[in-house]
Length: 407
Image 1 (cartoon, rainbow, N blue to C red):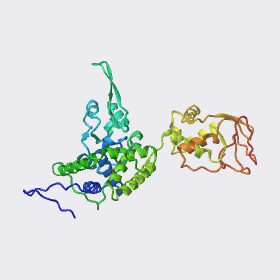
Image 2: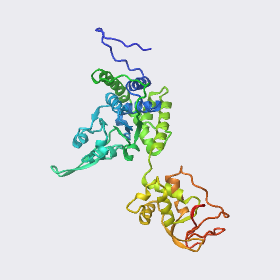
Image 3: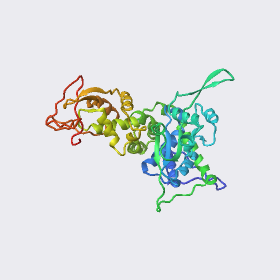
Image 4: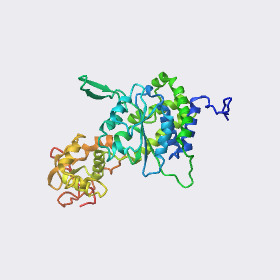
């Protein structure tokens, strides 16, 4: 166990910098002293995010930290206090003007901190369009804001790149959470205890820890900038988590394994809790509506979509989802209606299942659907007739009928 050296006068001195892994251990211990994190992986993720703020010039992406809770008194503001005390140059934006925030961002930006984030994104967000734009754009380098300066008659490019932590009740917009490490706080149970945080007493030693983190990471910015850590996720998730994994790899010890475990745990949690966009929801619901049918008329497809009491389609507009609106959304995925002649002799506008296959595989691959019907299956058809053996009569497009077992 490391003993803490003292000055001659007896005042405690800061612990010496030993290794990156030790610094991360100390930071994690400070977090869990004052805050109950929902999981071990969440505690590791927040630790690595804070450390990554001290090396912002090395990163191509600036991951957000979203601290959300379903109710008050879940520790989100206390966690933000500890983040403020240990991150790189904290900048509180709650009462800051947009101009002040923009002018504070440089090549070595501060860390933006927003408590009560509904002032930026929620019903009270009027007048904060500039801050919302900054938080959305600032995840990636080279996404400057453009402003016209009437005094100089010139267009200015204002940098937006900066790491940011946001705390609030409920979910943040998808544009934020898709670029964020999301920590879902919860109220402490009766058996869970933490140490009280007192700003005047506890912040100074935490700022010293922040200084130690900065000294360690700033000495190796070139190494961190060149790092290409093996990532257990892809695409935007990899962009978001790469700085954290790079810090863990640089620290060594058991942190590389812990970082990747945190990536997998928190991204899986986000996937489980996340809501698909309305367009992806429509694709998924169309897949369920088709069942095993090779084709459906537009009228039948709409009826089935609007019949689901948990789906939004019955309340989209005064009369629910319309054929025109359905067609407009599906055309974004290169899915178009066609004239389909059904085996009972009727002909109607409708959609072929095969035209959805590419979109389903790309946007909702995890959704299972019944296999297409075999030749001997008995299917009902529009108009109420039920042939003993369905046959597809092509009129330029293949077609058939509703899901087995429905009228």
